[in-house]
Length: 228
Image 1 (cartoon, one colour):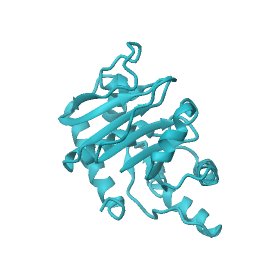
Image 2 (tube, rainbow, N blue to C red):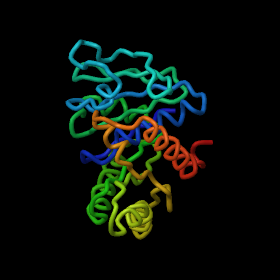
Image 3 (spheres, rainbow, N blue to C red):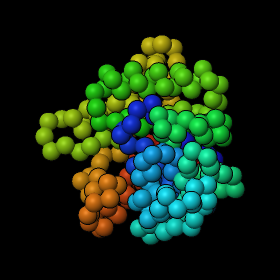
Image 4 (cartoon, rainbow, N blue to C red):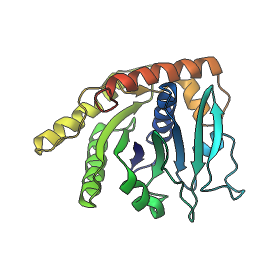
């Protein structure tokens, strides 16, 4: 199975969702490949300690991160990472920076996951709906899902609101006579330590491990139908 995590906008949680999906499948004893196809940023490669400037693009490396063992590779403008030969390949793909390899990864995809950012819900609806329509218009046959990735705020009720972003998208598509896959879901709620971890800053390993464990449980529960 090939899962492409993508969006038409940046900073929406693609890397977070890609890593968590990879960790989830590793914990299920799957042979997993995680691909950093976010050229120009390569957050995954940096987080895993690989130098994108040393001509290592397109290659596959065995890595271990926080106790999770998997294969990993990253792209540059010339080389993509082959996603064949794995139980699950998860591709962190930024269409705004990595369009060169779009045909390859989207053609290979069984599922396209679109993270919902912790921004205005009305904007999310518009961006996500247009992106999904563009994929369908391009003939992409993969199943398409949106998934909320929300920052945990200490005040107001924004987290509670963001948890249901996916349902608002579902209703919007329902009104157009279309289906968006998932309905009400738990989603991923950022923690400060995870935000520090993913941003290459100091973090508490114990708290990050706890966040990963909780997030994997949320992903399994929310997506149990297609994960069978």
